[in-house]
Amino acid sequence: SVRASYGEAAHPIVLSALVGPKGDAYKPDEAPDREGARRFHAPQIMELAAGELDCLEGKTLPSLDEALGMSDVFSETGQPYTLSFVLRPDGTILDGTPFGEVIDRIDNGVARAPEFYLVNCVHASVYQAAYQVIRRSHPEQASRLIGLEANTSALSPEELDALEDVAEESPEKFGREVSGLRASTGARYLGGCCGSGTEHIEALARAAAVPLTVA
Image: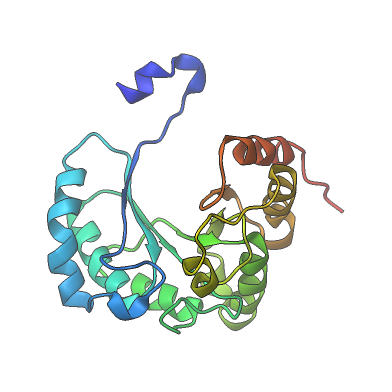
């Protein structure tokens, strides 16, 4: 019914169900271990998988162990799934694990690997810096990372947590910087996260509609 409500001109529409972390997405010390994550996330994931969906998403993940447990359950559903993490500029996720190692451990440690990996809840500049580190240290794994759902602030997770109001930048700046990741990192999945609204996404769509110049 959601697909039908947009009409034929809007196709294809992909329906995905999102599963977040058990604790605060910015606090990896609140994340469960692998088995704890399996037990906690299984009821919700199995219920979502029973619906008419195209895929499942693990989003804003702060720790490797929780991602492994979540992936164990995703694998059991038979549905395609993706995983998205919060990164620091040094290319590590919030529990300190290098992202290239995260990808390698999950791809080779679960029954069925994710379709691809994403980053969310960080600024485009953070993604840009982190991607360069990952590409140098784990080039094979870097190819599994396809894009970003970006914040409109470059503040760290700790700084964002301390704010009383949402920090944001102009839609034009957001659209330009996020779209620029296509050329600088090969990103092909782009979107918005904290601080972004309709105007930010419209600006991103306009910027991304400009063809890349191939030298």
